[in-house]
Amino acid sequence: MNSYATAGVSALAGAAFGAAAIQALHAQARKPPPAFAIAEITIKDQDGYEKQFLPAIVGSIGEKHGNSIVWGGSGEALLGPPPRERVSVTQYESLDRAREWWNSQVTKNAVKIGQQYADIRVFIVEGASLPSP
Image 1 (cartoon, rainbow, N blue to C red):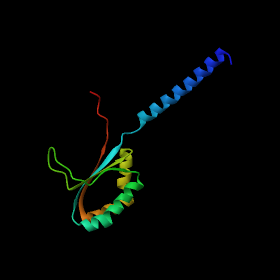
Image 2: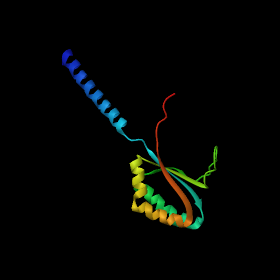
Image 3: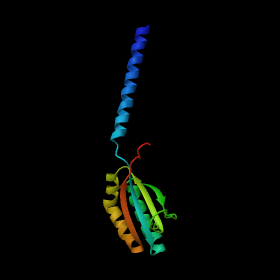
Image 4: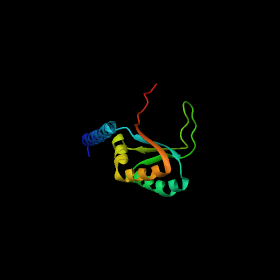
């Protein structure tokens, strides 16, 4: 192959690679920020909570592709009132996906069960990147 043909093929390959990289960057820019479902829980009946509620709510989270980040554990207040005895944080792809989880019949059924065994507060927040200093 002569040098002109080699240079031409190299230029075309570089342009194709560059176009693919730009497409990937544009796709990333359009991706919505993740969302987080946060639950604060005070257990009234440990046995019922563990045997009835946990399997139901874990199933609903898995069904909607949530990613549990925090599940239980002890919390510590740094400012303001202390957190409840249990805190759960679940990440979803977007605020819409978190809403889909909350509004699904599987989640509604799990929450009904959970309210028999615990006082539960749930809210969702949209994640965002902090601006660079």
